[in-house]
Amino acid sequence: MSGTNQNQPPPQQFNLLPKIINGGIAGIIGVSVVFPLDLVKTRLQNQTVGPNGEKQYKNMLDCFRQTYRAEGYFGMYRGSAVNILLITPEKAIKLAANDMFRYHLTLPDGSLPIIRQMAAGALAGACQIVVTTPMELLKIQMQDAGRLAAQAKAEGRKFERITAMQLTRKLLAERGIFGLYKGITATAARDVSFSIVYFPLFATLNDLGPRENKADPPPFWWSFISGCSAGSIAALFVNPLDVVKTRMQTIAKGSNERQYSSILDCITKTLTQEGPTAFFKGGACRMIVIAPLFGIAQSIYYIGLAENYLGIK
Image (cartoon, rainbow, N blue to C red; front, side, top):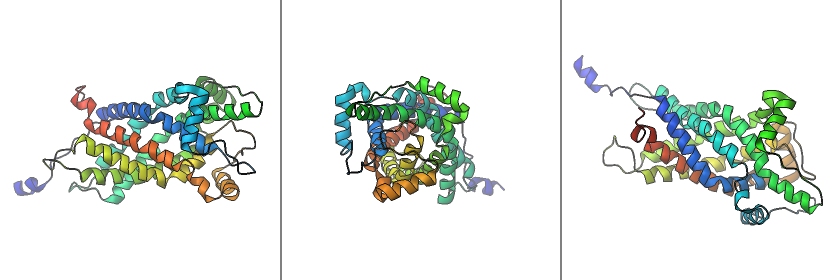
């Protein structure tokens, strides 16, 4: 009997609170660093090609240049307050939920097959949309306002900017709480798909890292590289879903820009009028955004600030 017990792996402990704190801190640091890139990504995804092939932005660098010239440095952070405020619960839920589901899906022998890793990622992605959907909805309107304002100015029209709080009040007054969940299906499709790819890939890459003892975590820099690599691959994989989500959640449209009644309607119209390459608009920019965002967030999360520096066990 004692021999059997010796062959059993030691029982693992899991405490959700420090994981949530680590995820929140990781999210704030990560999004603060990459937000200007995310703003450019949103504007590139939302612009449509005119009847004569004209574009407001030629490429990512041109979008940066035009945004900085028209709105200045702080214009690159338009909508960041909403994002930073809500990224805390969003990343806390995403990272902590994945760890929690991985813990509960681990087999008695301590192994976690790839299918179970994917299931844990999917469940974590499904949990986060409660916060992600309203966060993305508000963020996109704030980010895209500069593009619409520039377009209106060029056409001699007026464009009235509104704050995130004004938009929230407007949506609640017109549609109730469900107004903040416009595009939730598209958001769920993107986030669940992303998490299915990202988390197992990150875990695999992170486990390959150098370490003195097998039980030790890999060094900070290796978790950063693993997060960047897994994040960029997963971002490219789900970029078509991100384009659909962004367009579905954009409330204010520019001249001759289309409204969509459903995900299928958005996919059909985009494919028919812009071709399959439209689903990869902002793809390079999104990879550049997601790579450092998840590299920073994942490495900060793995440092264990709550456990090691705040004394929360």
